[in-house]
Length: 340
Ligand code: NAD
Ligand code: LMR
Image (cartoon, rainbow, N blue to C red; front, side, top):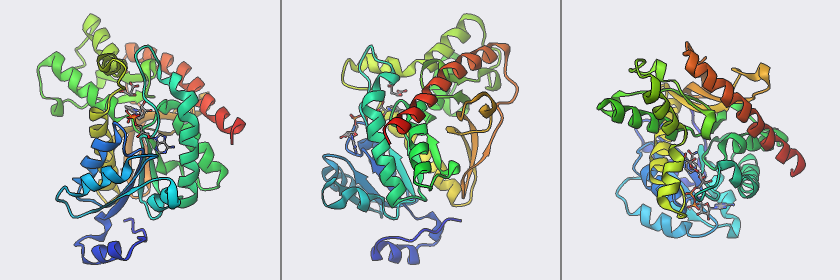
């Protein structure tokens, strides 16, 4: 059970009268006025475990907050800008911090091409998390996730507040895509098609374990095409948006789902979801972070599951994944060393 002091009298009152105090959480969204931030804020407003929604952005957050606050759900929504200590106010008392701040891809770019801009944005926001919400569960959406998560980890380590169980790279969109795409191949319902996706969040580092799905029979060209579509699903959206950004609506749904899984787990009902975490699975090979199924609980990432039996085909995918992932993680770590 997690009980965290609230900053405002209002929230203390709400908590006191709530039937279950452990289901009342403050969630801060950093980058809340962006393409992901806006629909994510709406979806979080609709989550009854969220009682206090703090929306922060360089611009536009108060407008988004005013708009979302009219949705009839009993939570407070406040928008913050950098002026007047807005970031500190947004983060103080936050149980969960979700970070979609940063630029998205345009056609022809890789996620790694975003590194030069997004690394410093994420580093600076991580410093603020370390200062004002050191115990918060922090969910990183900003790309390249394979590098931004290690950046946050290094910053929190430098502040002496790093808890590996509380830091997550959100890879849920890969999981949603896998369910949807396999349902299209098989003519089934996506909600009946759980697919574990492991590794990281870019191109060949995204490894769907189809052999563990309901359809281990998928093979040959169908398996190649399905795997490729899951690995490069992001490119489909980037291409279709034609310069106007990348996935925002499906990503908001994915982040809302992962946030809800975490809040459900904090409230005492464990949920297992794939997510990119500080992981023992391949540390002996110098890979500090890896996405696999993780059972979430009151302390965060409580059990990191082994990959389980994988096919020969998937073994090859995992080998290719590890090569890129190791470089992406090292790049994030080096960035903080060189630009503390
Ligand atoms: P966007 O440009 O629409 O929105 C980004 C927002 O971040 C903007 O409102 C901007 O003002 C804000 N911002 C920038 N610097 C900030 C700072 N220092 N503090 C606070 N806010 C800041 O972009 P988007 O489409 O919402 O995408 C955001 C990020 O999410 C991108 O890096 C994108 O690649 C990534 N993304 C990740 C996934 C995933 O699966 N993890 C999926 C889709 C997109
Ligand atoms: C995605 O998978 O949709 C995101 O990572 C955004 C992108 O750049 O493709």
